Length: 404
Image 1 (cartoon, rainbow, N blue to C red):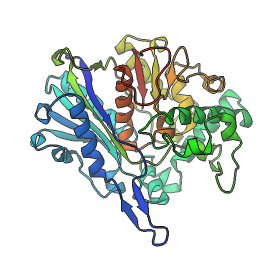
Image 2: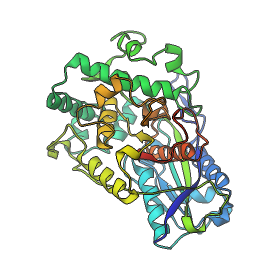
Image 3: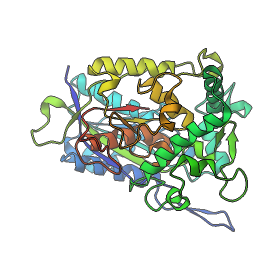
């Protein structure tokens, strides 16, 4: 079985690429779904030092393009990247916020099976053409709709339930928990300010507001202008990730065919696991059991432990999930991640492991279908010594992990 390496990657700018007329409410699309798709695909091929004719297949991860941009069946859009890709196999994967991570896994499996040597993976989502209600509905369709979305349950509401179970199980008080969540947001905002591709990047809102410390976030008003209002108790506005547009792409190759001068990073281990979709069927809502299963599989295949990890990109769609993913990865003991973040752990200056150097979904942005590819693309850049934005100060990292 062939080993698989990443040999090139590209991440577009993340942001809200629209212009909304305040009077007519008319929206102008400033960078379309198709623009983002093509930019990322071309960028990754160029970064890999290949020509489009060298690509054997294309995998595309996108969560809900039919709802966001009225475009279903997006994989064949790969032909728009370059005419040389015409007639190559192209496949779309959907796995909610992990859509493009699954695209990468399937691309790796194709290479391992010997059916391809070079595969292009693209993740893309254009979310901001819809208003808040439209976005909320589109995302709710990734919940167990008969029981959750159809009854008005949103994803902030679902993750708020996890937060309630977490604080109850570990006996964490409300005030202390708010400090934990603010510590997570502050870390991601601080890192995001160094990422020129981030939605909340240099010169962005978080830097202008000066909310890069837990104290500053906790001091924000609960109502009125500039408020950190409650969205779904106990989660506030600054506990939620961003509604973003963007794309990212990678080129995967069989390791034994990679040229000596290529900037290659081996995919050492993959773990994937699925949990019950209805939250009501989960017994331990204070932990990520499927996440822990996937982590164990990944570490075993890679031959590493949590102690070997230099940095992690984790899925902080909500700040509570950064606590849960940090624990699932074994970077904190169960129930202790919040205390670790409050103590200042996991920054770029941490002498053991840094978390979300990109700014995470909280600051980099969360165009759902692009998120997995972006996490892998920016991790790849860290590992080849060409970091985009913040990087660990302890030296060149050798082992990175992505939890999507």
